[in-house]
Amino acid sequence: MPSEPTAPGPHTALRTGVVWELLRTALESRAEAAGRPSLEVLDTGGGSGSFGVPVAGLGHRVTVVDPSPNALFALERRAAEEGVADRVRGVQGDTQDLLEVAGRGAYDMVLCHGVLEYVEDTAAGVRAVADALRPEGGTLSLLAAGVGGAVLSRALAGHFEEARHALSDPQGRWGDADPAPHRFTVAQLTGLVTGAGLEPSAVHGIRIFADLVPGALVDTDPESLQELTRLEAEASALPAYQAIAGQLHLLAERPGRAPSP
Image (cartoon, rainbow, N blue to C red; front, side, top):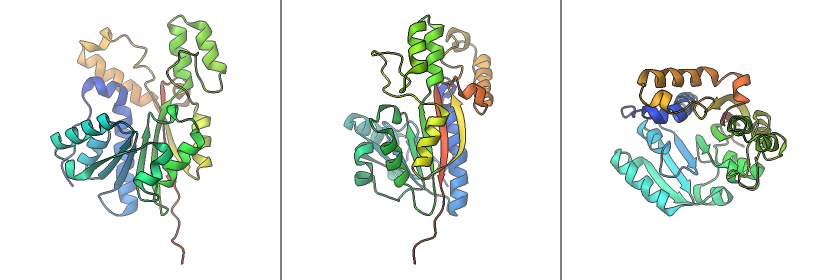
């Protein structure tokens, strides 16, 4: 296996570090279950490879599907700079044609980060990424916007009517100007993955405090930044804090099935 890539930098780690650590651990578990060190990983909506390239740096083969040619060009450049171009390929597409462009049942792990919010038919989107997993077993890493985080942030900004709207809106939106078409609760995400035939294995809240703490408190104090990052990690597994998280991260497994005779 190649040497482990550098984890995200300190400011990025405040928002994505918890996800990266969860993902790295899940990759190790999946590789152990599969009995081989190098996995086939699909990163749908992976853009320029903020997760895909580091995953390739761990020795896995990564296919990134994204609708943007510019993002895929940036992915190619980033992979070359990090020395993993031979383990990363970019394919243009989205969740609607995912299985056609990336293949069905071909991947040990699928990343679906920041995508489900923008999919019109969320159930169909989750079924598509689930169907990309190997029938003998695989792991889905799903990261999506959380309703509670939007309610809290709008209320703290003084937009109380918008906070109330997000609280009761079926899509978790705070109004017509809301850029996110969908937000989710833990129960909704769990229902989507179980409906796609997967078994949820872990849920974590992401960006619980990071969006609420003024940047001036941590930007000039590395020790405060590290402590806040530790707080994020420790609170992420607690349901009370998941309920107010800006994002929710869910890991789900496809139960292994014996091949047909």
